[in-house]
Image (cartoon, rainbow over all chains, first blue to last red; front, side):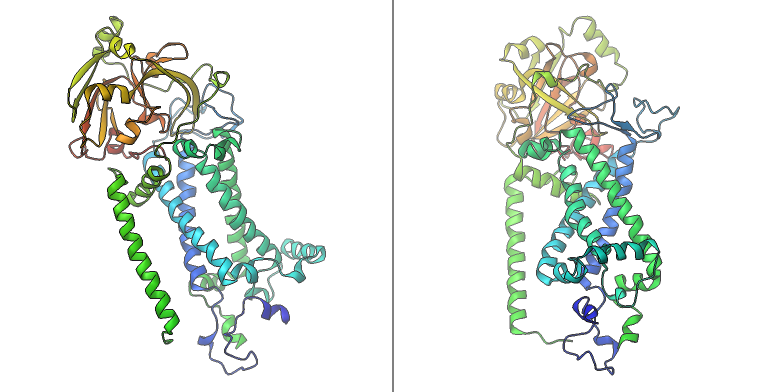
Amino acid sequence: MAELESVGAPLATSVPASDSSVPATTVTPRHSLFVRVTHWITTLCFFALLVTGAELVISHPRFYWGETGNDLTTPLFKLHIPSSRSLVPSGYGYVLPDQNGWSRYLHFQSAWIVVLTGLLYVISIFFTGHLRKNLFPRKADLSWREFSSSIADHLRFKRPSAAEAWSYNLLQRLTYLFVVLILFPLVIWTGLAMSPAFVSAFPLTVTSLGGQQSARTLHFFVSLALLLFLLVHVLMVFLAGFKSRMRAMITGHTATNKERT
Amino acid sequence: MRKLSRRKLITTGLAATAGVAGLGVAARLVQKYGLVPPDHGGIFGLGETLTYASQRLVTRHSLAREFSSSQISKPPFANEIEPLTDQFKRLQARGFADWRLSVNGMVAQPASFSLDQLKSYPSHTQITMLQCEEGWSYIAEWVGVPLSRVLDVVGVLPQARYVVYFSIEPDTWESIDMTEALHPQTFLTYGMNGDELPVGHGGPLRLRLPRQLGYKNVKFITHLTLTDSLKGFGKGLGSASSDAGYAWYAGI
């Protein structure tokens, strides 16, 4: 039970945990308002970035390594999809319509919003204790046995216990930390490394990645990793109970609030 | 409803004051440095303005990366060009001897330059990357005269804020702010990789801006005009690309 109390802190601190007559309304939300708002802003921006990013790739579905790359050079790999540019040797007999104008506008606008939201989020998780309490693995969980049992539970698609509905399990914590502190910074970095004006002021941003085309290729792969995270994340929400998890992330409350009090 | 504590009241008050003061400072900066792009309206105005303003604050004088001659792409990739007009073909047939670059607008001395005149100014060389918004790129050696040199000759009036530049191709024009126009790597380019600038790359004269994407690097330049407002050009968004839905500032 210590596990329950150490994380999630479902009960308001002013209320003794043993008091079963507490009405459900005094219960601390499963997700704080701040986490809920930043979550959905990020979701919206990520969808916009994904769709427009794909649209931009279509105008040149070839990837290179190093500083330069174009239709005359050998690509590292290419996607076997039609292109929105006639000069690209896509192998298809037709050219898709050009959608790059609005795609670029929306890509960068969403990037700004998600970066500013993300900055606020990262700063706040240091101060509110969200990082320490809910995202860093608990000491007790930091063992190979916990790690492997957590993986085994996931592989068996075991439904989370009641305790887990109130906190993040080990794999969840490691994944969220990886996404927030590694993948998001990487996707921002590789994105900025493609900006000719930005790298004029900060050339190390791109030279450290091996060149502008390397940055583009890495940006593509980090985006794929984020997409993979999104798919697994949504799958997990379904497995854990779509309705209750969506309610928790939208209203902050879960059905278990009442059961618990 | 929880009661407002004194601490909360004070912090909220301080935060609000800081916010208002911050907005005030931001408005001052915007006015002083010209941080609002011509395509700031519409649903993407927020992102565009944030990009342009922060680039202007951070990268105003920075130099685009230059490369070694061993990094020059061979052969350089020439993007598609529109079918050449009869007017262009006539000029081409005479070796571009009659090619003119006219400069007018907010200048002390409107002028027209032949290619020979432009080549009589000390030439400058840069080995820089051309990046297309589509994602491909190449590195080439570009030879030309800095735009700032030509602007010196005509004498830019202090109220001028933009240089609008036109191609011989119909409906092909762009504009840049004075920061970009006076930047030492902004070239009127006539040479490439030790030769004349090929027609496929915009010869005989192309405006080269290594800090912005390919579509700002307009080919076949024949005319420049200096202005304090872009309202009278096209839809007033600053360039033919912006009229067609692309961002005006392409340093991203």
